[in-house]
Amino acid sequence: MPHFQGFHYRATPLTDTRPPLLLLHGSSRDETELLPLAETAATGWPYLSLRGPIPWESGYAFFHRNPDRTLDQNDLALQTERLHTFIQAAIETGLIARPPILLGFSNGAIIAASLMIHDPDITAAAILIRPLSPDPDAILPPMPAKPILILSGDRDDRRAPEDAIRVTEQFQAAGADVTSHSSPTGHHLHDDEPAIIGQWLTSRFFPLAHTRPPL
Image 1 (spheres, one colour):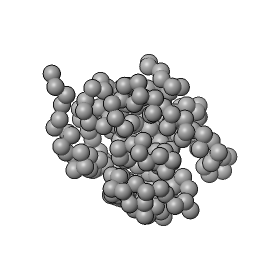
Image 2 (cartoon, one colour):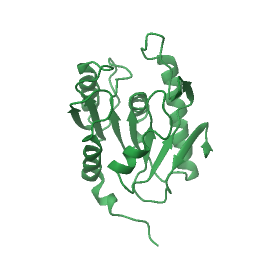
Image 3 (cartoon, helix red, strand yellow):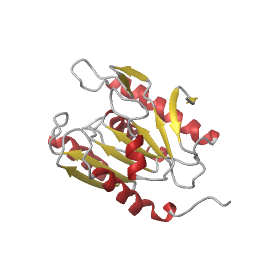
Image 4 (cartoon, one colour):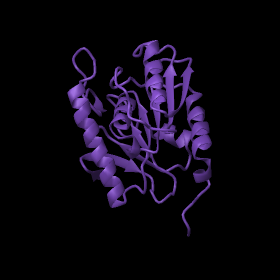
C-alpha cells in the first residue's frame, strides 16, 4: 500500500482535472471505509483515501479523544497540522494536482472541519458527515463562498441536535456556501445520502465534472 508523509493511502489515478475527494474515515475504521460511498456517490471521481495515523480500538483514527470521549484539543491541533503538511506536500509533489474536496465521516469530519479552520485555502470544498465543531466558540477565518455540505442524522445517539446546527452557523458566519441536510437515521449513513452527496457535487462542480485532460 502506498505511503506518503506518514499516511497510508489508496487512490484512483489522479490525472483527472477535477479536485480529488480526500476521504477521511471514522474512528476504529481505515482507508477502506468510505470507498463504497465514494464509488456510489461520485462514480468515476478521483479520490485519495487516507488511513488515520492513530491506532484506535480495532482500526484507526485521525486524532485522540479523552477518556470521557471529549476531543483531545492538543492532539487535534497536532494532527490537523500533520494533515495540512500532507496536503501541501501532495500538491507540491504532484500526487494531487489541486486542493482536494474533503469528505469526512465522524472523526474524519471533525478533523476536516479543523483543517478548514486552520487554513481554508488548503481545500476546494468539504463534505462533513456527522461532524462536531472542533471549537464551538471560535470565530472562523473568512472563507467566502467555500462550498460545504453538512449531513446529520436526527436519531444520532453520538451527537446532540445542536451539534450540526453549531457547525453550520460557524461556517455560514465565515461566509461559506453551506448546505445542511438531516436524514432520518442514526450515526450510520442513510440510504439516501450517497445521492445527496452526488447531487451536491454535480451542482457545485458541474463544469469540471465534464472536463477531462487532453489525450
